[in-house]
Image (cartoon, rainbow, N blue to C red; front, side, top):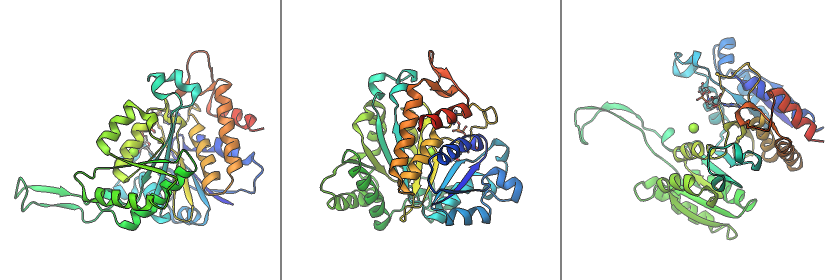
Length: 356
Ligand code: NAI
Ligand code: MG
């Protein structure tokens, strides 16, 4: 089982080191190879996603990714910016299904500023389509308007597009994920105004007929945004398009107390995947040894589950994370009175010890 390890920038190297430590302790035949990605790759090779890094990622069964980006690259031309690395990996590996669980760990409910009854026991899975929609649809551009409200004025346009097969494959992913959970899918769209959303809904209904054991319902995206804040526990699996999923998954992450706890997975049709924490490179705390490595460690657990077919090892890691939280270990981002503040490395060590 080959893993491409791409730590990237900022806290990326610190948190990925802890996840690698945990993976190494599992006594599995894992072959890990590290490469540069993001700003550090640009500094060394003049490109955020060097050929060699892409080749390694393509050949691997899975990619364990830290984070990319730093303010110091803000002035670079778009194609050289660190974030292009992640877009390039998604595109080249065909990673169309993005899994973002939002779980509120029991031990962290008290540390959140949100009402306990709202978030205690929260465990939802957002599945976002990742390669279609208005972010990639052509044509797009700028031109002088010949119609509309202001003919003759400069205008910009993007195109929201979804094809039937694109929707079908993400629908299957969602229904199959629901079968392994509580057998409920909420499909989110805006079918009262958008043609793409009408097709999205039609295809969800059709594919849903192949999964009679899964209950499917539909929600408009504006209502879904409200319900996520009002009664998030009503959701189980939420499936939606690229743009709505971008926004709703960030909204949902805020229900869990800390971005430092949230893993993510992006998969293609052969279950090859890229696994990364939901947060970024946190340049404000990089190099201080205080970043929370748990999102990355939990991403490694998702990697074992989805791409490496090692469910037992995945559960071992997840149980170890629960255990260290129960033992009271906290990095600064999840610290509350009466718990024990630890560094990035100490948190990794605690997970390692809890694995046994
Ligand atoms: P961020 O997620 O890096 O940081 C937001 C806040 O959360 C910061 O205060 C940071 O200190 C804190 N934080 C994040 N992860 C943490 C952790 N593991 N432990 C403790 N605290 C943590 O988002 P921000 O500041 O908007 O972006 C910083 C850089 O990261 C930018 O260059 C951005 O483009 C990049 N980024 C990269 C992503 C990726 O690699 N997939 C995703 C999001 C942002
Ligand atoms: Mg986002």
